[in-house]
Length: 181
Image (cartoon, rainbow, N blue to C red; front, side, top):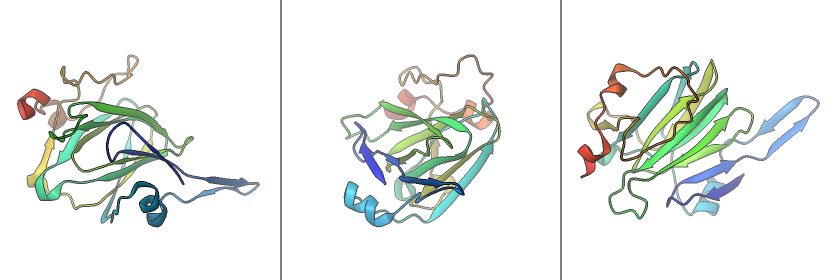
């Protein structure tokens, strides 16, 4: 497992070592010992989630607050997404900034997103399977979100004319300034 730092404290790109032969391929998608050795973080995942979405679906930007804040390890099993993490830690040097990366079944890249980030993704291929591990349980009363097209965050979703499919709930999320100014 090759782990690379991003400019966001605690946020890492994880690239597995892939073994291929005439039978196909194999890789270790997560190794707690290696993760801890390379990042200094001790993470215990307690919940796995998976979604299947069509091209143009935009999910997010979501987060959990307080005692239910979640770190996530996200990856794509089939298809591809533009994955976006927004630092919502007021004490952070990168507060209000975002990081984006293409995650796909072809590159097998994963993103570790620490607690204190909002997260969302835009699906780039039909029938994309998105999977993520969480270090805390989902709690409806602790959920929060930021509207995907927030002018302060100015996220380039690289949608290239895609007809976006966004849930009614996600279309009604507050702005960053409403929550943090």
